[in-house]
Amino acid sequence: MQKISVIGTGYVGLVTGACLAEFGNVVICVDNDFEKIEELKKGQIPIFEPELEDTIKKNVYSKRLFFSTDIKSSIVKSDVIFIAVSTPSLDDGTCDIKNVLQVAEDIGLHMNSYKVIINKSTVPMGTGERIKNIISDTLMRKNKKYLFDVVSNPEFLREGSAVYDFTHPDRIVLGFEKSMVREILKDIYKNIYVKGIPIIETNVETAEMIKYASNAFLAMKITFINEIAELCEKVGANVKDVALAMGKDPRIGPYFLKPGPGYGGSCFPKDTKALVKMGKDFDAPITLIEQTIIANEIQKQKVVKRIKNEIGLLEGKAITILGITFKANTDDLREAPSLAIIEQLVMEGANIKVYDPKGEKEGRQRFSYIDNKIKFCKDEFEALYDAAALVILTEWDQFKDMDLNKIKKCMSGNYFFDVRNLYERSKVEQKGFKYYGLGV
Ligand code: NAD
Image (cartoon, rainbow, N blue to C red; front, side, top):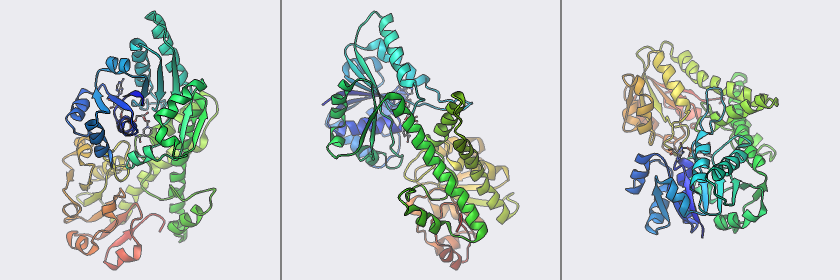
């Protein structure tokens, strides 16, 4: 059993803290957001993530999981400190690591014994070294001498299945300098080591690079199939069959071959931009990803263009959007394609009605600047009442098999834009809709 602090209690930090407690460690989840920590202390979970609430409650009850804003006492009480703070994009695409460096300084200031510092935030190559230097400099300034190790342990969990992914990862990547730290890592992740899941041990810079290369590749794969879908449509091919057949090739694999409104979320957009920026800075351009970013922006515009082409003038038209989160099973709207698509539809004069099972709270904040043009509804049927068109933007399970007869009766128009290819064209057309999928 290890005494652990996880600094940064967001999607990654909170899941990491809860799951490490579930593995039997004693964990303090730390954040400088007082409101968030107060909520957690009262048993309120600030984000939606399947299985998270139960895991937190169980481990709080068992006195293995605690919440705090007191970074000093959390560092003092812990042998192992995870960093899981936000690393947003700067305007030029650079990954802003000031939160990570702040935590490194805090660790240096309050260190009272040997510590292992494990970074889970996605950071540019070389950040591990900077963490190490900041801690060393701070210790020196304070005239203190303690040994410590810095490990890069990038996180690959997917929002929407984060608890499952953390406890059943495809691989664990560990970048470190001294092999002495291996036993501590083995102890923290004992539940995963015993499952025989691949553990990739490497140096810190390689571990940092693995995260960027993985995310950029996945973003590229999504963008690839989005472009192929458009060509399929023009030549009378069906992208679902194309993807199915491509996916059977083990060199390609079946995942991330579903066309949609473009990738979003807190990772792919910022990580692709950061990789491109690093490529330019080091004179090793990553041109495929430069193009991926452009194509992904175009993909969102294509959705609006398609709607305009089919409906004509959007002024005063009632359009229903089903799903605004960037993917299903999350409440996260960071960089969601819906943000750009809805904004554009509103600029064209459309009146928008929205239903999302978990995205309303964040949606109301993000769209507050156009709130007179958007109505949030309690379910899909309220949202569809008197609508000219339906646009499915997020692949929530409950949108996959809706009662088409009931929908038809609710709506005044018959445009059915299935931007996630959830339906069979023939079934929807049979009910009297005009169906538009992507590449089908
Ligand atoms: P988040 O915004 O949900 O959470 C970050 C938390 O860090 C916030 O609660 C914030 O208040 C806190 N924080 C920031 N600076 C702090 C400081 N100095 N001291 C204490 N707390 C501080 O972010 P996230 O989605 O959890 O992502 C965290 C990191 O993990 C990022 O680098 C991200 O790229 C990476 N990551 C995210 C995902 C994902 O799916 N969200 C997956 C893998 C990796």
